[in-house]
Image 1 (cartoon, rainbow, N blue to C red):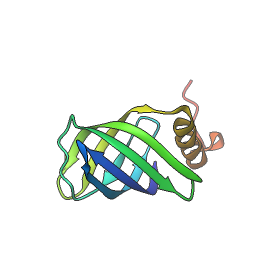
Image 2: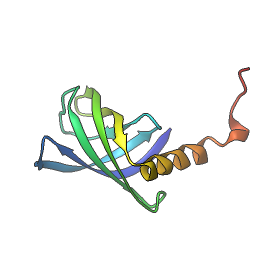
Image 3: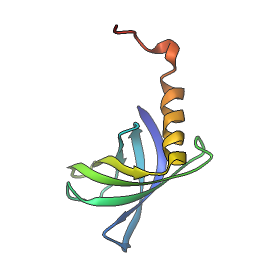
Image 4: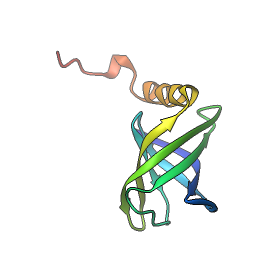
Length: 104
């Protein structure tokens, strides 16, 4: 789902930390807009801030794709229950049950 937030990425070591922007997020991962080339398979730390979450989401992710000049697709591999609850709340606000289609 579309979502904008600042994110601080940590890649390999603190010296590689830089700011980027999340443009899409789900319970499974996010797309991060960045000029930085981070190879698929890389493990990164994420510190996500947005007024919509009233705090920060801290997670560890694995880069699953890199689109040079656009950003990286990241799969979440670890996060606290509080961070997962924040993402769940964001997703539910964007896609309320009344808007979902029943497929049964």
